[in-house]
Length: 290
Image 1 (tube, rainbow, N blue to C red):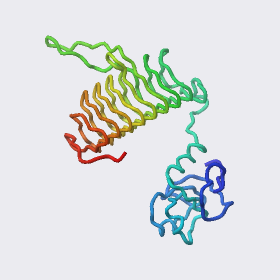
Image 2 (spheres, helix red, strand yellow):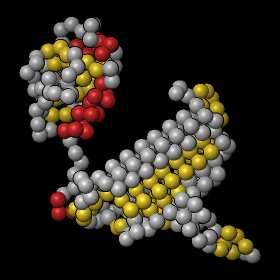
Image 3 (cartoon, rainbow, N blue to C red):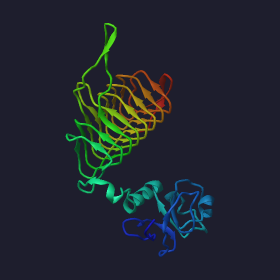
Image 4 (cartoon, rainbow, N blue to C red):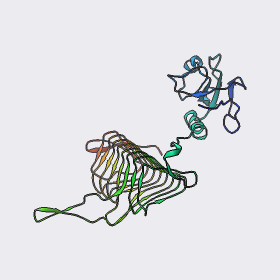
């Protein structure tokens, strides 16, 4: 961390706190690696544990505010959502940047690596970040404030080949890939272009590393697709869905809104809204809270 942040930093720690008003921390750390100059967060509810933490500034749950007595840290800031307050601090004080010599072009405050392959007809919105070794092919559009990490390939055709008279025949893909705004796509993700209609990723969605998304898939807004997920062709995933690590969807599956598919599940039938699915083959085991 290259700056010092006191508990009273305007717009940040205008939250109740115990400790010194002038105490400053100069690095970010985890609970395990913290020292007496670190800023950390603690989302637990163990008062005794919080009091024993030796850190600079601890962002802790507001529920503990009236319970805390003597403590080892320089200051404790109390937030209704400690992890989110910590996240906002990271967003505002720290930025992932490319080396200046690696920048290909700047759109707004965007950063495009010279080592990325981007075809001429690709559309990029303002303030996008495209990391090295990303490949973006024609008929792909990406909305503003989106981030694509290294090794990801977007817009190539899939197979979709037709078996006829003893051999496969190529199905020409005429669709593209449409990605909304404020989307994050991790490393080594493959997103295929549509066959007769576009592949679509809705705004606000997060896609982790090593995910495979088939042709003509429709993913809604604010979905979370964890690492190692495979989504077969023409699947539809509605808004606010969560696919946990290693989930597989066979072709033409619909996952309705606010649904969660648990780790390693294999979904071979449509999933109902506001539901939790688990297993192979996946089955509904309960409701998901809205």
